[in-house]
Length: 386
Ligand SMILES: *Cc1c(COP(=O)(O)O)cnc(C)c1O
Image 1 (spheres, rainbow, N blue to C red):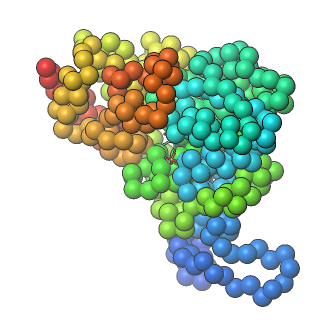
Image 2 (tube, protein in one colour):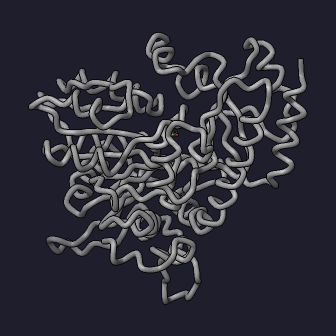
Image 3 (cartoon, rainbow, N blue to C red):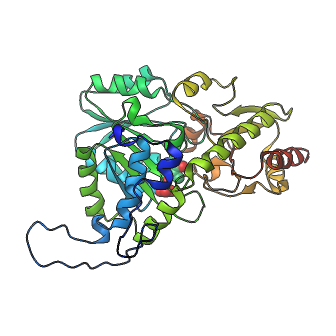
């Protein structure tokens, strides 16, 4: 509930959800590594079992994310895609239709395109983030609208309050992947969204050493998602839940550094003669800057850009980087760079990719928390490579 989130985000990151076991008095949530818990046979007792998401270590991580997002309830899952697939299975039945923004994370696009039709669920992918264009795809049998903002990898921004309001008039359930923004930079539930999904693998955990996901929303919707998470076996193992809750304690301070470094790298690229375009919502010249400034508290650490050279030279420039590491994934403390066409969006049909603007030469940076001046100097020296 929104009124649970009365502390500032940095304080919430450290304290919300953290479970104190009075028997030992430790300040951290204990790691309850047990897959069997006492049960005397009485009816109605909560069964302690990791797959049921009933372990306090899991509940602590889920509660921290729920409070940060201003949601009533939450769940942690074995990956961002376990969170997304459980949510889709909870909300859609055979005969239903779902509308997705087309330029979402490639794995989510592939999940919907490959799995939903097999279950008799139809879906449309809309190549626009405008409210009117998304709503134009809605049919009488549409049940769900799924967006991502800022979206991976092009950093397109969706008008969240506008989408949520329009979807409500049509009785749709709205779902957003808030991975890029994190609850520090953006709270979609306050803007009218029903469910918020995270790939916790990225900023929430923040140290590139864990795969996990989360879903938060109302008690009712989360109860429905929880049943699918249990049936399909997507719960987060307790060791990983423990690491996730530990990682999130520094989320607010990390995001401040990611926001500053994203801005510094975007400004460096925007001013460089070899760069033909940069997408970063924090640049005043970005087409989505106004929208982002209205609904986000920070612009994040993700940016995308194109170079005025062929792919071979682009790969040489990437190879010349000394700090920014060529690697997949994002949201960790270290700065990373990748070509989305051959990584996050490789499974997307080439024509679809090109129609969206995810070209073979598009580069995506995940700005880490290193010193901004070091990152800018690294990028500038690599761009000298011919
Ligand atoms: C990585 C990612 C996912 C998928 O999460 P996993 O933890 O890899 O399953 C979903 N959405 C976005 C925006 C991502 O970056």
